[in-house]
Image (cartoon, rainbow, N blue to C red; front, side, top):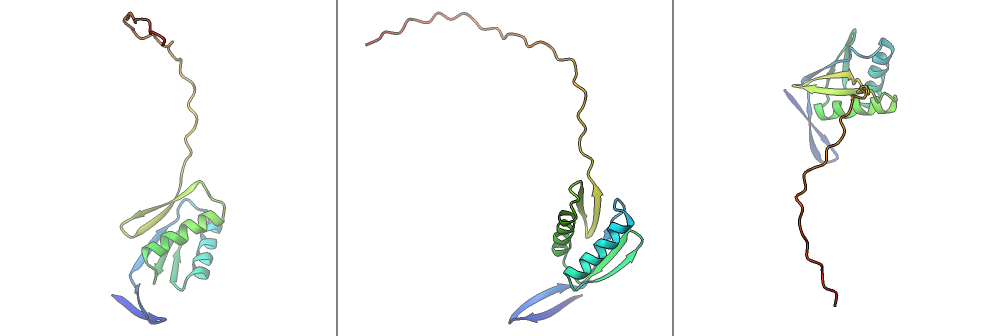
Length: 123
């Protein structure tokens, strides 16, 4: 079901379908902060069940935008947003650890055939 609302003479479509957000990698305080942030930044209806948030009244594009903005403003660069068929998940992105240097082989010289070059004539 889609709601149609008029805003300054333009017709806007507001999706009323339910969007699910899973934030298992965040602390409980961060999930609470996320709910407060989403409530303040939008007019969506939110319902929290432990670390799962149900969002009603926002498009998936707006939800994804707000999630990225939340992670940026809270200085959480090690977290990312996964979008799978209308379900969003905030995941901790593990940085790649430097692997120990392996024993490197000495570079081999490529075989260059000896080519006789004629001396160039200067004018």
